[in-house]
Image (cartoon, rainbow, N blue to C red; front, side, top):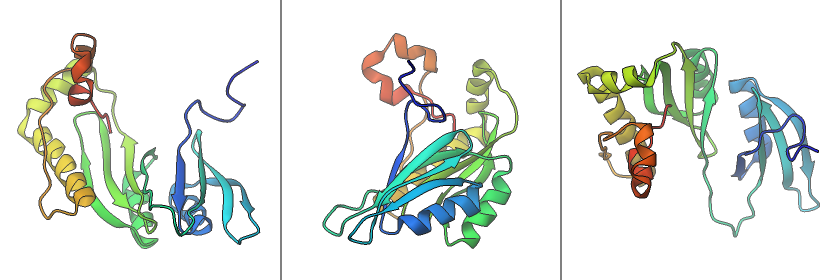
Length: 190
C-alpha cells in the first residue's frame, strides 16, 4: 500500500487565510488551479479547501480571529511567468521581486497576493548544469540578480526599507562536507 494517496504529493502546503474562498478563486484564475473542494463549517468559515495547481494539491482553510496571521511562502512553476505575473497583479497582488532571468535557467519573480502570501512565480527556460550555475553566479549580472532577490524578500518580510543579502559560498554538494552549515550554503533554485 502506498503511503501517499493517489493524486497527492508526499509534502503538501497548507495556506491559512482570512478568506479561503477568495484565495481558491485567486489561485484558480492566476495559476490555472482546479478546485477539488471546499468544506464550510457551521461558523461560516471554510474548514478545509483543496486546489490542484499543476501536480501539487494546496490545502487551505480560514483563520480564526484569535489565531496569528500565517502567510505562506510558495514557489509555483508556470509555463509563462510574465503572463502569470500580469494576472496576479490584475487580481490585486503587488510585486515583491521583479521578473528576471536567473543563473538557474529560470525566469521568475515574487508577488504578494491579496491574502499576504508570497509566491515565487517561475518558468523553467533552460537546463543548466550545476557547475555552470556556479560560474554564472560569479558573473555580475547573475550575482546582482541573486542580491536583488534576497534584498527584496528581506525588505518585504522585515518591513525594512532596505533588505539584506548574502553571497552563496559553496555548491549544494558541499552540504555533505559541512552539514552544520546546511542552511547557509543550500541553493534555492528558484
